[in-house]
Image (cartoon, rainbow, N blue to C red; front, side, top):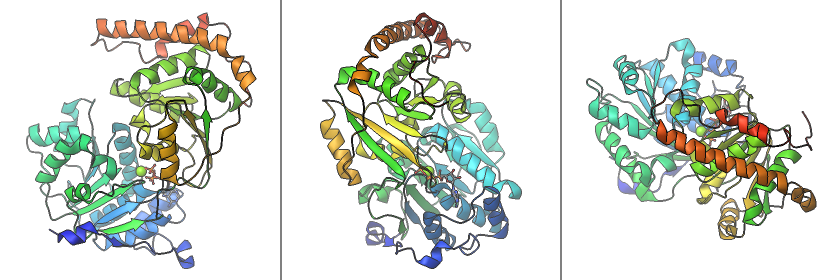
Length: 455
Ligand SMILES: Nc1ncnc2c1ncn2[C@@H]1O[C@H](COP(=O)(O)OP(=O)(O)OP(=O)(O)O)[C@@H](O)[C@H]1O
Ligand SMILES: [Mg+2]
């Protein structure tokens, strides 16, 4: 184990990125030819800044704390060195990637498969909400890479015969500050106890805990800190705004903004499952193609929602913070913080769902009379004062009646939905998650609100 002072103050790798680095290739970083070709096939013509910093050090066998803005290619920064090492010394159950959410685990697995397809890499996704038996079978086949949420992995470590991680070579914590948070404490401690001390550890996130105590739990050995920016930054090409409105007009302003920016793809964040569901119903009743994603939905419905949104079959995804970290959906144009995030760092992750990989995007945060302090904290964290998103208040007020009617229906549907769920919890054919509530929409006069721009 490393001396504590080494762990307390990781070596800083960040130096000003020199001009010649701009033209570096994956090959220059030490990535093997077959993986360079895989990058090429994904359209990754040159490595991103965090990849330039982290990959050579990871290939040298260093432990890494990687801190870089949202959408900057952190997944590749840890996946490529792992695949490179796997090619050099092929071994089953080689690496474990821990992520806070199930959807993110699937996404990371897709990235490993895309980069590793030509070298026959096998990965398994081990997350909750999915049949445990099939996961046990997948683990029995001893995949090279496991991508897991901590809870379900712990279940398998305790209950699945013949499965252990005693030979593990690499541990990654993606969204590491979240994984090292209290919510996952018990599970992560259990996992750390049963994997070898003698391994490489990579922590990656757009925000990192400064609390050394928390980082120590990951038992890093003489880690290098690869930080692309010195403080938490939101992406340059992201235009950020706020609107200050009375709480009771939130729905009306939301509808106004969706009309104003029609033709775009939206991710709208709410603070609770209930409000996510309610707002989705409300918008559907007004003719918007909105779909919810939250923790009270079954896993198949969660993935179904996400896939419909990814495939552009729905233009609005309403979500809790379950969707705030890591998800890479390139076509998201606008992020709306309908309910302000209570943890300022979540703001950075939420708005990072747009303006990814050099694209541009917009974020609009609703600030009500109750949210002023939280909003100030966010501005302080990102080191910026945000401008107001311009609204025509008289036009907004013209929407109030129709929104009120849609609100009434949404409340009714939510009640019916709740009772239906109570009656038949186990009913697999249960047509919930708002998709079945379309009938009520027709009761609300008219379809989509009239003032549609674009498409
Ligand atoms: N070298 C590269 N060149 C071009 N695109 C890249 C490169 N590396 C990664 N990408 C793409 O950039 C997008 C964002 O990557 P990724 O999801 O790894 O970001 P991230 O830094 O992990 O963001 P977050 O903090 O939100 O998790 C992905 O679509 C990925 O395929
Ligand atoms: Mg990521």
